[in-house]
Image (tube, rainbow, N blue to C red; front, top):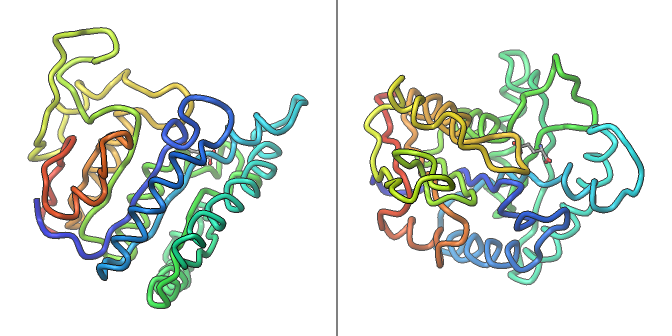
Length: 253
Ligand code: GLU
């Protein structure tokens, strides 16, 4: 694994809610603590956080659109992140992106805003702008969004934290013989076949989405790690060079 200096960390819904419709403050605290430690070591970090829609569902006792639920849940999500990072004297900045923010006409501003937050030792906390996204305009999943952010800011590493240990030879939830694949040289067709059908229940991205993200990242010189948020000190260990989960190598940028 190449050394990490500038990283994009994406945390999926299942990691943030532990499979419920409420945010797990314990999971979030654990992650905030690790991110604070890495930031203190001088790493540049952007966080892509899912969990708005699931949290909205838990808070709102009525039938409502995804947009409405995201609007309600996003507030609670950011409130929690702000409080937890404040415990480590870190400020956060919220960024809600749509597809158009990555188009040529707008990407400079998008990039500058993320970079400016990082420069000021503030953690950018990014999500899709779900409350105004339609099916046609939606980015779709946060794995992809995280890869676009990594590409834009020139991150060396993209870390996708999920409820599985990484990419397996078969679906580990159904096959006890499934084996973790520690290294993927290239996110090609063969890997997609393995990744298909292994989605987690609450988020929109499964392993196939993660491989898509890794492919975009790799094409722009960024390595991707898919790992479990449950692995003890996962972020600290990865930053110290340990091999955890599945590493998808960076291609030449
Ligand atoms: N943006 C969605 C949310 O915050 C999650 C998308 C995803 O799971 O990839 O609820």
